[in-house]
Length: 221
Image (tube, rainbow, N blue to C red):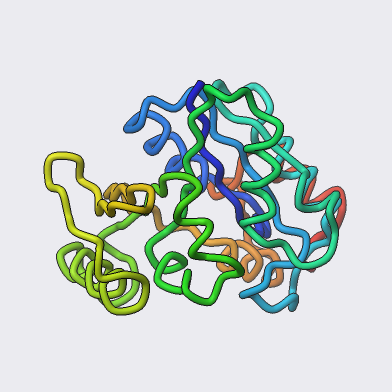
């Protein structure tokens, strides 16, 4: 069993998340991608944040009926600030020993990993899948790849080297960091919330069930 762990605020979850997740699942032959909403994200302000129950409900609705997709409330049940190392500990304790776990993260978030709790331990625990895309920030794909290599060498460990055959940065004592280019999607949770405040439609940005839930609950007004 190969499982990808994909955390986020999902405020709200949208079609861009689902498309990207599908590309990662296919590229790495994952049996399942688990969506894990954060209770209190350590690196994002709580402004304009829907409640944990609402965000969890929307993630469950988005995952329902989609093959290879599941929702998990482990961080919400734990309450307090959500730390990735605690979530990885949970999955490594509860999954069968032969399960292969992967941590899925965007390149922008990964370039802040040196500020994460126990990041050294996290990099030893499981492989990462770092997603790059042509429209990520101000860097093109080559620039993102170069920035990632410099960051690894200068901020984490000089032992990382890039293996082009594996499309991964490898290290003698740490798990590999796979790099995957994903298709850019012009959708963001910020844009969705802004549209809702302006009374504009969002039906082309979120799954139908999530659209209905947002309007039934009056979220982001």
